[in-house]
Length: 98
Image (tube, one colour):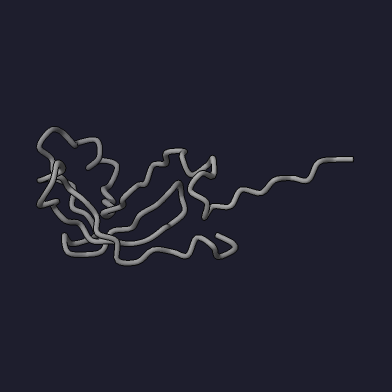
């Protein structure tokens, strides 16, 4: 007889996968230059994005949108002066699909 498959509970802090680091990508906007403009880029060139500084940014893990936030500069602690994101909406990870 096969042994029952053990299911990891993501709510338990000792679940093995909760200790795996992930990378979150913050998308601040897109630039759509023509190929000829792309070939002319050099140090000091400026790419204009399709968003303003105050617009929300999107957070992704891989190609999955996990939430949105706003850009801030950390004001205190060891990360003082560091660019950061304050989350304003986090997707429901328990929802099926995606």
